[in-house]
Amino acid sequence: MQEARLTVRPASLADVPSLVELRLANAEAHIALDADIYRVPQREAVIRHFAAMLAEDAGRDGVLVAESDGGRVVGMIEVLRHPDPPEHQILCAPGPSAQVHTVVLPDARGLGVGAALLRAAERWATSRGIRYLSAGIHHRNVDAVRFYSRHGYAAAGFSLGKSVGD
Figure 1 (cartoon, rainbow, N blue to C red):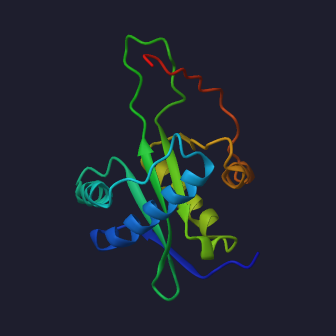
Figure 2: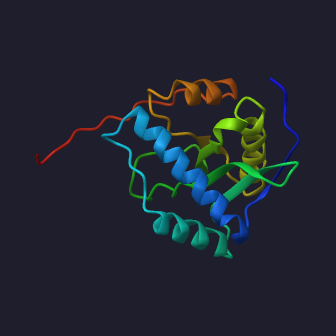
């Protein structure tokens, strides 16, 4: 694998069009994994999401982008904080935590873009007191499972579900 020359930086409002294209391309790829649980969101909803997220002053969540040496955004990572468990719950969280969502354009995969984004997200999270990161991966997405596993992410339990009311 040859590493690309990249700049990883916080996303800005000017990056919204690139973020939208990344999200929509990622949705299409996930539909191929399981069309019953994934969808392509409405473009306008994705625009509103990223515009609001990047306009927030609090910076609760983060979006970082990887930019090639030509200035093209080739990947992004979102760091979305989990709420702390309520005081009445018995769950003892592993400390402040967040979930990461990584997207790399298909023609930029295998060049170290995802690894650079993940390292930057871990630094971003640590600097904000976040002590635990998770990545929700569909079991059929073997490339993503392999990627996160290579970077120290491991199975952290099971999520069980059941459809009701049908």
